[in-house]
Image 1 (cartoon, helix red, strand yellow):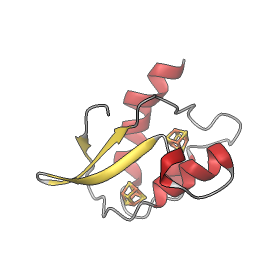
Image 2: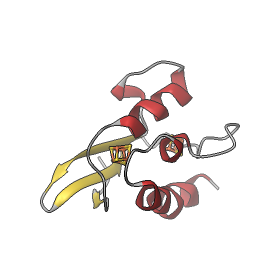
Image 3: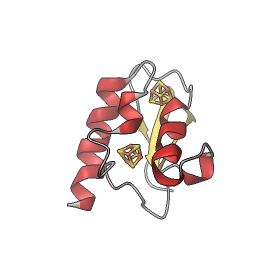
Length: 89
Ligand code: SF4
Ligand code: SF4
């Protein structure tokens, strides 16, 4: 798994992971999410799963993980843009 970073405001609800799974395979399952959210020292952290599968929600019009994020939209959007979007373009 790639490096975890603290996600400011995240409450570990996993809605982002479910939204990502829905984007990829049209159903809810953690294993199909490009991202993983979990407790870590100091709060809740996020990372991209290996292998890297984030396509920045091509065809959706927006990042679905951010769209359905409960409490940390700004931090999650920044994470996707800085560590995700740069890898698929
Ligand atoms: S932007 Fe990437 S991590 Fe977020 S839902 Fe889309 S594919 Fe998943
Ligand atoms: S949806 Fe937002 S608040 Fe919930 S786990 Fe994902 S990043 Fe954290």
